[in-house]
Image (cartoon, rainbow, N blue to C red; front, side, top):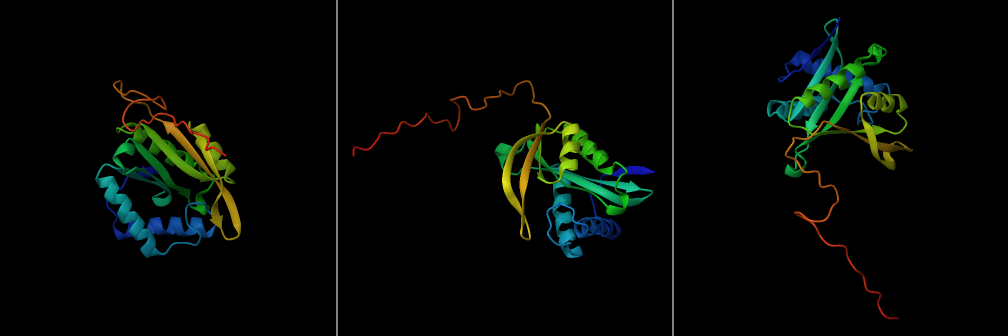
Length: 199
C-alpha cells in the first residue's frame, strides 16, 4: 500500500527515514544536489529548515510510504524576496533505489503541484540535470515547460551537465495585471541611446 504523509514535525524515526532515502539515493548516483551522501547531521539541518518553512505556510514536504516505509519524498519552498513570494521551487524529489518503478516520483510531484494550487502561489519552478531525460519527460507530462538552460553549470567531479530550468504556471487572481516587459511601472527605464565617441 502507498500513502502520502505531510509532516510538520520530525521525530527521530522520521529523521532516520528521510536520511536513509537521501543517503541511498545520492550513493546510487541520484541528482538531488549532493556530490557525496550527506551525513545524518546535514540531513537533520536541511529537514529543520524545511519544516520551519512548512509551519510558516511557506513550504511543503511530502513523504511517500510503501507499506509504512518512507521510500520517496519532495518539497516545494516559497521564494523569500517579497517580489517573488508568489513563486516556489520544487526540490529534493527522489525515490529510494529499492522502490524505483512504482511511480512514486510522479505521485510525489503531482501531490506537490496540487498542494501548491491550494495556496496563493502562482508559479512553480524547478531545476533538473540535463542528462536526466526520464525526469525531464515526467515533469513535461505533469505540465512543466523548460524556460531556460545554463550549459554545463552542474559540476560532478570532472563532468559538467546542463542545468535545465522548468516552470508550471498555477494561475493568477483576476485583479493581477500581467505586464511582462512592457514599459512603465515601478523600476521601468527607457532604452539607452549610445553616442559613438568621435575618433
